[in-house]
Length: 143
Ligand code: RB5
Image (cartoon, rainbow, N blue to C red; front, top):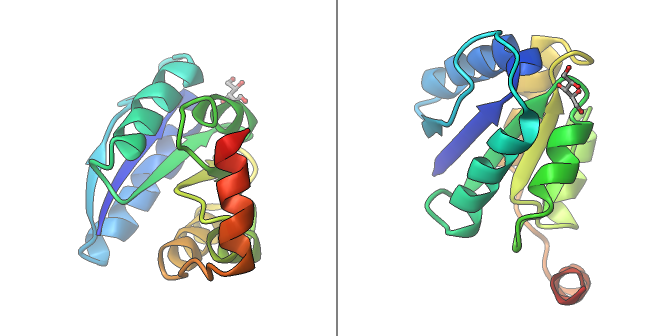
């Protein structure tokens, strides 16, 4: 499994904590930035993250900003992206099971690192259920 991860400055520290977790699990990832707490614009990172996932250069994306809202709105502008802002592991579980989400979005300023890591873990370990959910996901793609 290969992951791409990107954040703005507001979630830079959270991104670093998640990278440490991914390394500890031997999960291959690419870091698309940002690389400090200096102010940047989240749509720039959402665009490069979304494009990596849409081109299937990676299996999943993880995007972060302060609230997760800007990253979520922006990444979902990229065709083929199903980005889900998940504040709890149960949201990540259903984002995978029912929505086949391919980008997990987290809120660096609203979640502690442990909660964020549990949410990542649930997202990466849950399969899409398909069936009736597949029909719905196909309808999303046709909007
Ligand atoms: C940056 O200050 C902040 O606006 C951004 O990280 C995010 O929360 C936007 O939705």
